[in-house]
Figure 1 (cartoon, rainbow, N blue to C red):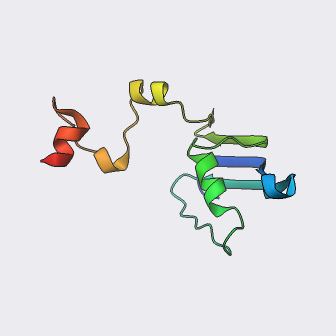
Figure 2 (figure 1 turned 180 degrees about the horizontal axis):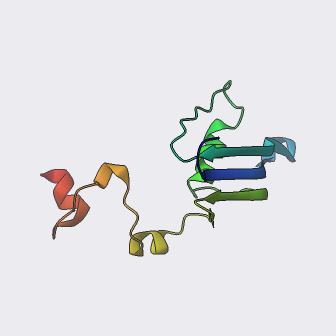
Length: 109
């Protein structure tokens, strides 16, 4: 790892409830990974191995059952629409200001 740790995933696990069989299905089990500042990492694997679950956890879009995820030393928490709207985070798709008309007007333009 080069430089300071940018992303740290420590013993993360995620299970989904499978109603039809009335049991939990593990999607991620005890996953750990550290990514340094400036490093490039690819997550690869077969369909259903937990890649999307892991990325959603890192993005704060999905709760994990065990472990911790930190970015720049700050714990990642689940996406909260209200705090997301009031924070200074911008989605890459909307790098430019939306203007007075908001998203709807800008998409129609």
